[in-house]
Length: 141
Image (tube, rainbow, N blue to C red; front, side, top):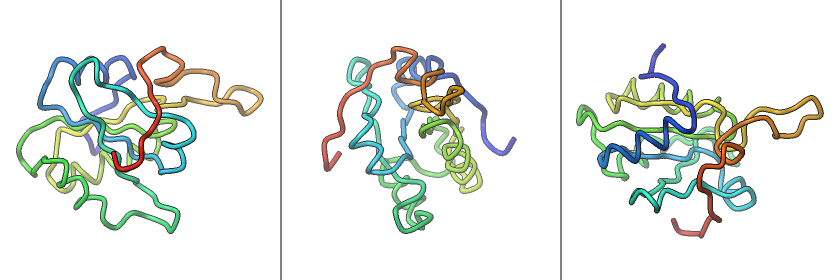
């Protein structure tokens, strides 16, 4: 494994709740944030940072620069929790962060929406379906 490991949605929430230095990054697209919702960490006094791993034009070449803009620096030891739709893009983000010296970097298993059922609907698991807090995305967050 090229990153610190995988966390269930509940474990990710708990890590953020227990560690004020943890950084939580949603790597989905703007369209996903706007139409599906986002994690809400206000109850544990945490912000969610929004950095697309892949943009409408392809890979986000500014990803690591944007990650640095959250206040983390390579080697500072701050845990970074990456979340996407289903736990796949966030693996890439966690890996890239680790290679660049950030972290420990974690991937959230199941992602925000989770896996698909037999009919292709996301009704199996994930942050939302596990009952963790969500909210609507406000432009400029």
